[in-house]
Image (cartoon, rainbow, N blue to C red):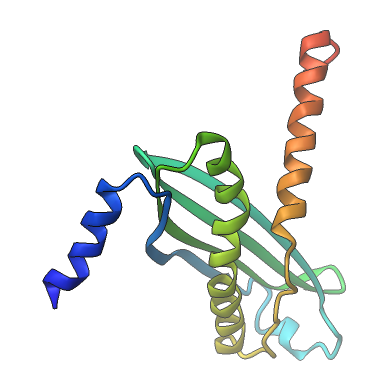
Length: 167
């Protein structure tokens, strides 16, 4: 069985066919804070939820990248923090025979799309284990997020070339 599973990988590496492979998906970091417990748990108000999501890409070796999808969820009652969750779901992705101009969109769109369900599940589980009703994060349009980042980078580059960017 080991021979069968390694043979396709060798064939993929030696061919000129484009290839994309998930090497590993893992939970890199997860933390929960309830700084105002137990007093805030006695307040009967609906919490206001703030969700932040970010993507980080790090090259590991030639054609292999780590993509980390991080999220911070803050729940507040009035102005006090009910709970704060920070989570980072990561994956190692391998690209072979894919043109360089196509790798960046895959790292910014396809890889986060693969990781996001794992992140959502881990966050919902953590909230539930903390004794709260799970919060199911909304779907994210990673293509739109990628396009927005490209537009921001172009604007910064244009401002820098004109010398109008101030510190």
